[in-house]
Image 1: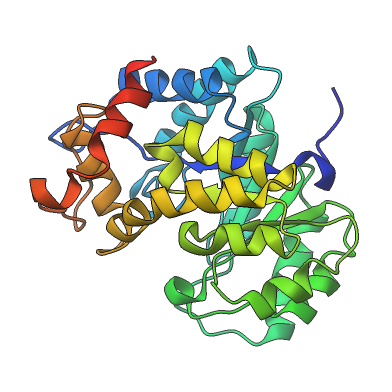
Image 2: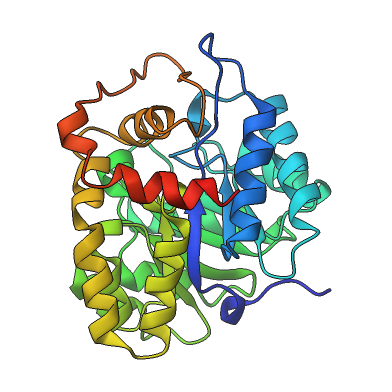
Length: 301
């Protein structure tokens, strides 16, 4: 099979949590169970070691083990792709991580803008260009300026999209004006990174979502994407309204603390999270409206 292209990136993609034991070690049996669940639900792609997966708190060896496991399982699936988060500050480290992702069989890499260092747009262009020149895998840019302080503008993204192996962007800003500009770029996948606004982004031409909510409601997010792709706006709006309280809960504290706590509360994963992150305290009345649907979806495993 050849490399994926922009047209292959659409629909429901999950920013997968990394399940951990109470001591913070990775629980690989739970990891494999979650991946198989997403394969069974025909989730379009799994993002390994993204923000939700606590990438900045994982070692290189841990990311490699998670990646190898995900690829091995997803090779059974005709639909579920594996995308590895490889972003960082040092371009040489990113290039090395991309080569490792290629070796491990990933379909694409997701590269966040450098963080902590405040960069000009020209510096961002040079950073991603240098990485792309030494990367064989397709690249998805990742713009999340609330975490990185660096914002890839639409004009910068359009310039980077001219590079053959830069095929899309995860845009986590809930700025519909930005989406309007990005969808004008030809042969380029625009993926929302914001659960609360992705339906509006898809109405404006975005191709799908890399979702936190899909950790607990993958079938619902998949159905919502399908409704949008088929132009069934009324059904999409109805389902999105049902999911809105879940979206609000998942981001009432910084990600991934609420989603991991909710998954533990519904017996999907163990209670571990890496310090300095702290699990969100569960208030049963707060999560009661949406826990039955989560349990019902997960019981299908």
